[in-house]
Image (tube, rainbow, N blue to C red):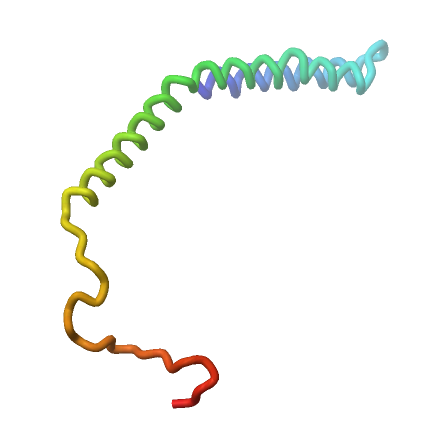
Length: 98
C-alpha cells in the first residue's frame, strides 16, 4: 500500500516542480498542485485504507483491557498491612528527627 503512495507522491512532486519551473507557471501554482493532487487526496485515501487496521488494534486493546480487568477481579484482594509484621521502611513524622 505504501509503495503506491510513495510513487504517487513522486509523480506529484515532479508535476509541482514542472509547474514551478515553467515559464507560464508559478510557485503558488506548484504549491496548489502539490496540495490538491498529492497531499490532500493521498491523506484521505491512506486514512480510509487504514481504518480496518485501526479497528483491529482497538478491538485487541479492548480485549486486553477486559482480560486484565477479569484477572484482577478474579483474585481476592488482601487489605494492606494484613501481615502482622512491621513495615520495613518507616518514615518519621513531619517535623521530628529520628
